[in-house]
Length: 197
Image 1 (cartoon, rainbow, N blue to C red):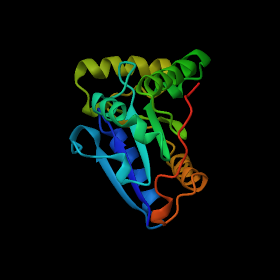
Image 2: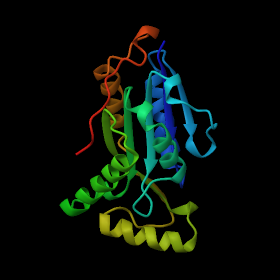
Image 3: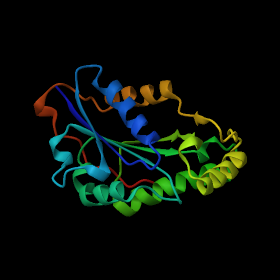
């Protein structure tokens, strides 16, 4: 049986939902999946204890959650020796502006390169607008961002933009491509990854 870690960082809760959905998809074939919030992860949480690792974090102020960054920095050498994937949850991907799309990718690649982690797969996932959970200032700021992105601006409601079917496909394609098998001998035999362009 494969053992898979889904480590996540979240600010408003949506990335936790993304991570939990990944856990359900990845566990459907009998794999054991641990879905863990980086902010409360045990100090001894090691990638080497897993056959594969998914990391999901959301973009806020042009960066990701500190706990995710610290864990990835600390474990990058081990992550580069095994099947790994990174999911960047962000509203910017909704904009149909090439410069914004490039900026979203630059934020992700800057994080990966600074950490020295080169995952086998990356994905940018559209996030959510939980307006009803925001304070008045954040609600005002997020409404302006949403308007620019062409997203919903009625702050009396919450909105999700994640394509759940696409997320499932990403997870299953990764598992097939990486040849994850229910075999202890397959653990740790992936070659180190090359830097992200």
